[in-house]
Length: 106
Length: 120
Image (cartoon, rainbow over all chains, first blue to last red; front, side, top):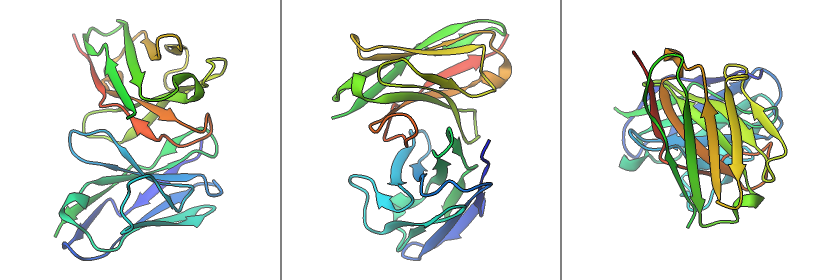
């Protein structure tokens, strides 16, 4: 099983600042990496697939990068609606999720 | 508009069974692979099971293999998850999710989830 490790567990950021979230795979997943956003009481929402392609309707302030085992999700200027939990997921070999990074208001 | 609506959750005793359903609309259901993902209270996401568009291929996580069965009825645009021999560790919100590009792909749309609580 491919293990996905996200860091940090919690990220405290002020509105308007940049947030950088990391995701590491225990073995290469090529670019088969997605990011999801989940707000309290809601279902996850697809943000990024193929490591760097934004899903339909996702604002340009969200960007993804990386390949192989190291990946990053960057939110360039945090808006109030961006405070949520973010999960990475590999779909190269079955499907596994990271444990999540909570982005909270500083 | 893609819609996925889960149902069938509830309170069940340890050792019991449930069948979850996910009614799909707004897309050609038979062309999409479908999956179940669960989330225990206050925890992260865990992939449970996936099925190809035709229903001919299924995959399940080791944690549920032999107890959970995924299936689909393309004539009804509905996905199912039969869950047996439930334990407290199966308590979670169960989400269905679609994959436009088939198995080995990401999950592009998600339902709102149905809560399964296992307790005596």
